[in-house]
Image (cartoon, rainbow, N blue to C red; front, side, top):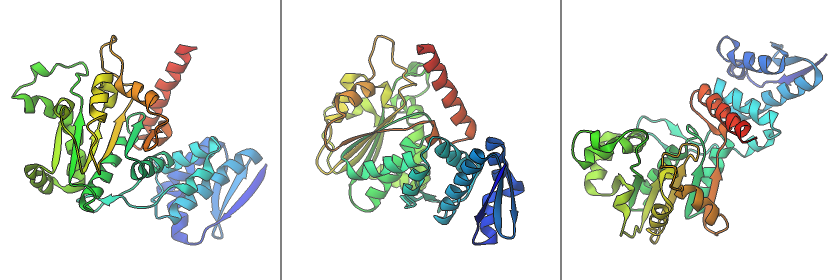
Amino acid sequence: MTEKAISVAELSDLHALFGDFDENINIIQKEYKVSIYSRDGLIKIKGEETAVDKASEVMELLKGMLAKGEQITDQNVRYAISMANDGEGKELDSLSNACICVSHTGKPIKPKTVGQSKYCESIKKNTITFGVGPAGTGKTYLAVALAVRAFKNHEVQRIILTRPAVEAGEKLGFLPGDLQNKVDPYLRPLYDALFDMMGSEMFQRNMERGVIEVAPLAYMRGRTLDDSFIILDEAQNTTPEQMKMFLTRLGFNSKMVITGDVTQIDLPDSKRSGLVEATRILKNIDGIAINRFSEKDVVRHRLVQDIVKAYENYRNNSKG
């Protein structure tokens, strides 16, 4: 048995690290089978030497997050544990604390994981960025936030958001209304992200002015998109022909972000995914970045992370 002590500058920091009813500490204690308690302004960790070292590393990572102004939640604790367990704890130092933009309710929007931080930097530095990974990793939301920032800073004149209208077990023809009513359910996640950033009134005003466009991918054919921030969402459901068509719409002073999850392809079995093919063909071209997210980057309910990981393990075992 061994014991380590970690100093804490302020009493408020101690409470933030422990969490309400010690919920944060309980997660760490359960993970490493250690005892953690506070005494004389110190956090003391007691247990087997290897476990104490890991628990201490996690506490130091959480202190670093706290120093950057992050609120310590059970999600942050689990993320710090996963990074420490994989030997990637030092990468958390590179996690940017820069705010991308502020939502219409005043909430600061910024990357929450190292993977998200690298993704945002890639979008800033490259003309075309692919974000490939599981649900809940913030691929689309962060891209929309960066698009809104670029638009507000007058770096681009338009925001264009698009998705392929591929049925996920449902048929468009059975939906009521005209074509716009039929495709709106596919585009709803994009509308929701823009509402969050801008508020419904500003969003509607910009839609009416034509400077924000949310449309199915088929509407992009034959166009050249200059001075625009263009996001293709759910790109795993494009065919290779559609992906090539979309990529060649790129105009001057524009950025493209292509997001998708290759484990959720809804195309018929006979068709290849344009996203899978594009990431293979374009991986060595300057100005094009390919970012891959893992289950560690999931920022939804912790069960989403567990579900993604369970499915990934199942697929790997099935291949074996």
